[in-house]
Amino acid sequence: MTALPQEVSQAWEQREGPVVLATVDAQGNPNAIYVTCVSRYGRDRLVVADNYFDKTRANILAGSKAALLFITKERKSYQIKGTIAFHTQGEVYDDMKRWNPPQHPGRAAAVLQVEQVFCGAKDLTPAA
Image (cartoon, rainbow, N blue to C red; front, side):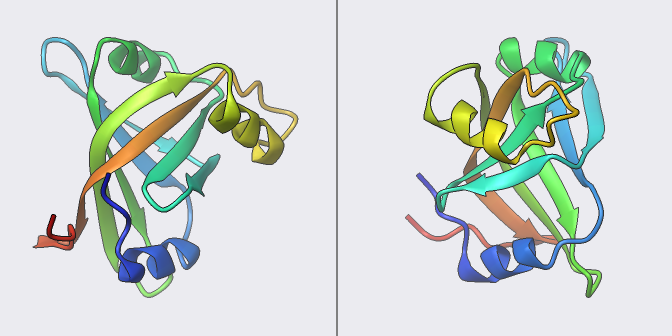
């Protein structure tokens, strides 16, 4: 497991606006969406509430990797890449249901396991 570096953890707290979640389908076609219902879970995972996924859900279920992109108030961008999986029950799902706004369905918790971290083109991934 790769923990988010301190710089990225601090930047996450200063993010502005929605984040972008990108996946690919089985043919390699990219799909990117804006998401607003997102949170950290531990030091090495980010969780996105599946409120209205369609292509994104299909891509994740087909085994897509994912990238999440966010920008800070200071206009620095960060990208986090890794494997992504759905949870429809259990601890992570229950946590998502606590912070996801009640007007949204919260069908599943899409959990991005941190593998690579970038600030622009600079690789911030901690050495193993």
